[in-house]
Length: 439
Image (tube, rainbow, N blue to C red; front, side, top):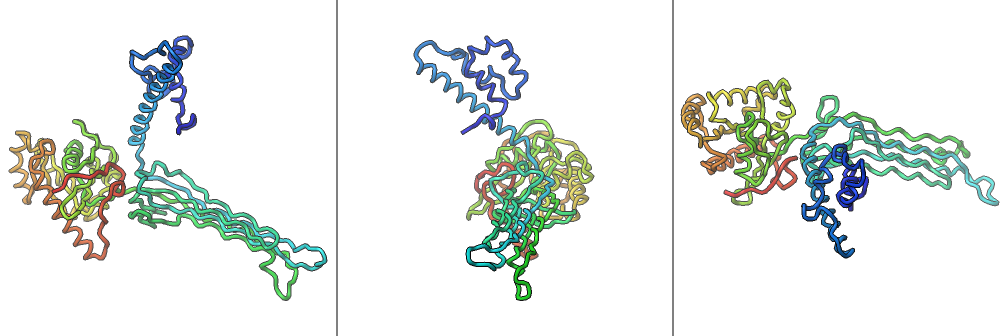
């Protein structure tokens, strides 16, 4: 199902892999791996034992080339998945224009033995709208273009024939997309299937038949179609989750999400491993599902857009409750909680006052256990000490998470807001969203 246009520059590399015996004979094929992106032709070949076409029948040669093609396809698919994860976009500026309406026609009816047939010019068709529609299969705004033009309506014709209206142009956006115009939020697309009319199509013009009256039996007037609406919109993607993991880089947020759910974000021993939000689903008895978001690490000064602060803080706004993750292996761990709450309040007033819990990670280390009593004494509140690596004390965190979820749901119902629906795979956010272990 692939075409040469879809495969791009790797098409030539595949041809070289399928014809390795001609690669050495051509003088300029040796530099092919240096010019083309992706795997080199030698990497696309089969194993060393099959580096050259086997001697024998034609069917044997065909089977060898088929194996080489399968190997090249698998490498291409893996590369495309890596590139898709790398190019995550959570904001986009879009210029949308509705379709123009068609012009009305000015003509008269002509028929034998009928001298005064009268006007029969039809109206023009209306222009098509541009509508934003939520699609659960879309994970980011990378597929949204910078501008969209709606379909134009057709002009009217003779014999009172109206022009065809322009078709509606649908733009697919992920769940949790905010639509802003001039700094004001005009739409919040937080449910699957939500739609918002981004640009209206222009009205079609009137034909001269429309202007027929008793005092004007032969009008020649017709009106042109109206232009479509033009707007500049800013789309922002905010992760939809019940709880958010908030912490500094390398605090163990991704490891904790892997421990309580089946989400598999990247985990490594260096900071800023997670560059995009990931969402995992935690299952409880009674078919209760709680979505937990792994927010990329926040740095000091994030509210002033230091680093990628605003891009990360944007995804915390939709979280109903927060889990402040503290690294116990660092000295004075209580300062991490104070700095995190300060950054959240400076970004949005009262954001840190949402239902939350303090989670102390890496308690399996000897120096971390010594700092745990000091942390509880400075904060003066309950601290959940656990280890995301060994799984120690994860049950207490899951019980506390269920209590926070119930409290946040009651608070939202008291304000008259509908609670977030049951999280589904692909509907909770742009990152990993898999089913997790129950409690």
